[in-house]
Length: 112
Length: 112
Image (cartoon, rainbow over all chains, first blue to last red; front, top):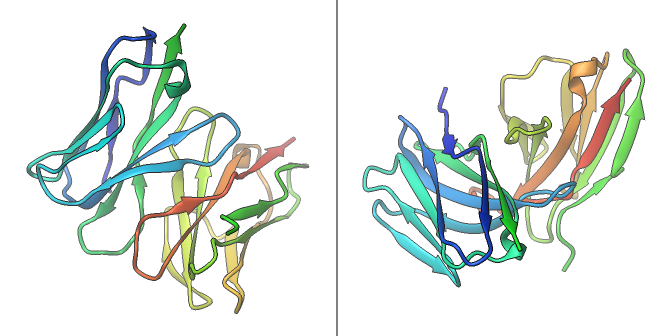
């Protein structure tokens, strides 16, 4: 069973601060996706990273895939209240069977 | 372009009853996956349908079954409901073997 562990589980910071959340596994993934989920809604895809060491930027969000494709990080610069939500990483296991394995999630709260 | 749509949005059932949840995939998508998300957890993979057949299955009992129709829409059926089946049920669609999944808003099932 491939597990993805996210840390921290909960994070509450002031608006304008920077933060990083982590997604770690002992397994290799062919790709890894980050989602944000609002209460009562389905997850919304933010980014997919495929290549080991890949860095992708989405405005104030920076995503990095680990060199060994076992871990990933999400860094948010100058957090805004609109960044509040549940951040989920999800891995596509090596072998292309398309079954996404989701992490435990990081619940982020940005305080005005 | 309609995204993934699920119905109903909320449902209350009594323990022991049966329930059917429905999902229409995003236009152009032919693969549907179902996930169960308990409160405060990441989504857990139930099963995936492609070409009207179950292609993969997660660690869920046989009480969970599904179906995919020729128009790619899908149903999730749960028999003999247990209190522990209370969760947000998410449907995700992809195009063929692609893994950039688009999620519906979910069906919130409460078993009493």
